[in-house]
Image 1 (cartoon, rainbow, N blue to C red):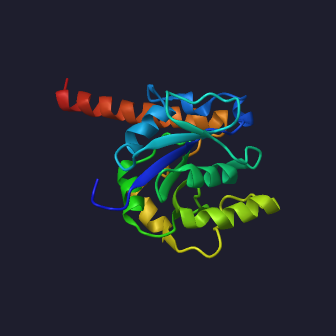
Image 2 (cartoon, rainbow, N blue to C red):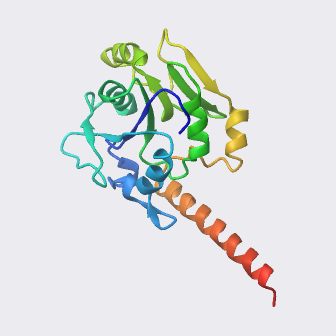
Image 3 (cartoon, rainbow, N blue to C red):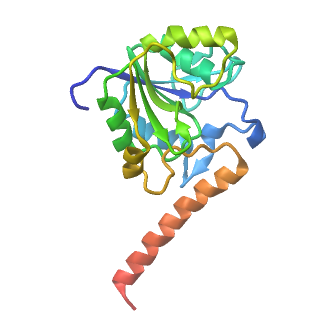
Length: 212
């Protein structure tokens, strides 16, 4: 990693996954590997340590260190807050546990930007579950949690923001998959089909090169 401020990474695993029948989404297999293993391969290239934020009575995955969500009934925003305040470093990369296509090149781009909040903005809007938060974000986020304002994509007030535009994101993500969340069975099937399609394309190219 280049010489820059230390970066931790937190994987949020405390959701109920109700649309997936309560399955532990981080352990779903995509491309022959659990999603969390795919994430760790990318995260380890930019961050250390890596830990989980999980709910009470929910076991941690793959032996990672974990902390308990301090606002377990407040959705992703509670997990983001917990990641910030329990991180050993000033800056923490926070990702959802159900994103199988994280790209270390893109994560390295985020890590290279210095701001209180480094956040991508896709065509859907801000992407708070693949973003870097400094401790300066903790107080304004906590205030919102206490007020019951739980929209994670709303930027915390009074902090310096570095926004990664949709155009820059597209340069790293031409297929629009980097920030894909496996929220539903349909999402899961799409993720698996994407990798199966890539594998088939690779096999076809090899066979074409071998010839008849």
